Length: 202
Figure: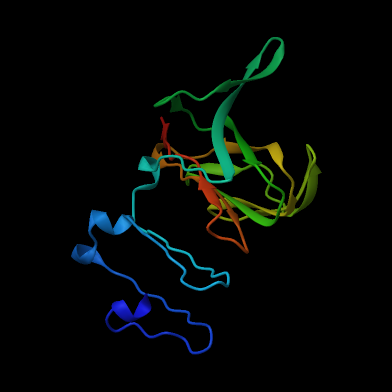
């Protein structure tokens, strides 16, 4: 109950309250949360555990939403262009064409879902125009920014969907490629993210 947390003010009428801890105040056992509702009415709330981590060390995380990010390299052959999965630690070269494949899914119908795919600064989107599109049974508005490609999905029906877009390798070095995050606008506790990767360009 909020009265048990010293210094926390409860909003009149709604009973809403918020509190946070920082640094050495945070203990592992604080991750064990028990919620009870002594009333007959429904109560809503959320608990968030937030921390900082290097992007390429992030592991995948799923809820009723899922997202998987895979990267491919396009190679030109006598039979035409062929895409091959990028291997862990594989060396890229400037001028290489990289295909990002995002596989997203949900076990229920949802509305107003946001997919944000971050990218390494060495990768430049080949299609830089933002706009509405409909592919593979999914309608979305795509927004291309300096650091990510975002997909605003009004209706995400139960199922699995595949989104792909091309990038060009433009710089040499070692880069953190970031993660893809899928989240509901109106129920932010429904969220998922892919694992992070490193990009090597020689």
